[in-house]
Amino acid sequence: MRSALGLEESQIMEKRSYKFGLSSLHLIFGDITTSDARGLVSSDDYQLTMGGGVSAALYRAAGEALLIDVAKKAPASLGDVVVTTAGALSAEHIFHIITIGRKRNEKPTITVVEEATSKCLELLSGLGLDSIAFPAIGTGVARYSTEDVAVKMAKVISEFLKKDDTQQFQM
Image (tube, rainbow, N blue to C red; front, top):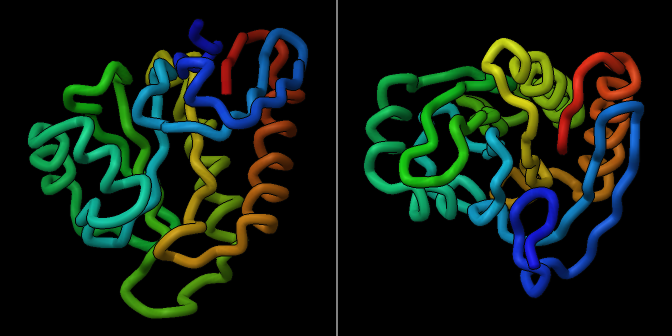
């Protein structure tokens, strides 16, 4: 049986769901590469190397077409959201959040998470997307605190969903 975001029930370690008007927020601990969300979020360094964590997993699943598309968009700046195709994945786009900049401590971590999450959400409608899957942004190689990231992302996403009750989104 598949969940709302396309994960096999056996791949889900934990799931919580919340309703906001017409939209739903699903907190799922699982493999983002198997999600059927139309947009997938990754975090990466400013050179978009896709060399670690979620970005490396997405690259392995998406194939060389993704790497070619990403190379055209590098370099980027800390906090940027770079949108590419999704290669062989079933998603339409990957939103690459730049969580590792040229210099350490260029910008406060939580500010990067908050602003980039908001940017991803703002891009959904313009790209014709109604679903997006976020990982815990920057909690791997960038070493952001999982708890801080979860709280900030939940706040930004819930505010977005409360604000727009005319469209239906799956997150």
